[in-house]
Length: 198
Image (cartoon, rainbow, N blue to C red):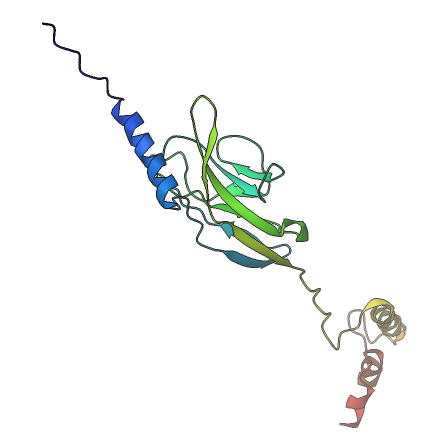
């Protein structure tokens, strides 16, 4: 009597992948970690968006998006693309890397919104595996610095400089290198006549 063949078992990596997916779906464990729920930054500054993804998860890319749904905007792809203002923090080419944080520089008011770090799975088609909880970014406008006080500006400053040169050139010459300058003349040109009474 022939011995029946033993049932075929899936390879260990496929079984592990299946168990990981089942575990994530059953317990709603957030493997993709975004530590900051919100950040506030001023225009012109830089901001770091933190993201940690365990290297034990199935093979697939990690992408950064702004917003959710079909109209979400791709912010950074660690594998390809050109993103002039965005730079990765960790070395994603290093084996065992878990840091997928990014830095966005020259922040503008248009950058306000919620950013998501998303893990995908490679297969017959790339499928979204899990997204982080998101980091909401608030952007405030930078205030223009005030000009320093007690300093001539604009036409007044230019005129005082011009009058000073005219006065000095009109003074009598003592010799070939030195000029006689009366202190009262300098004080009046600088707009400090009150010092004469001290």
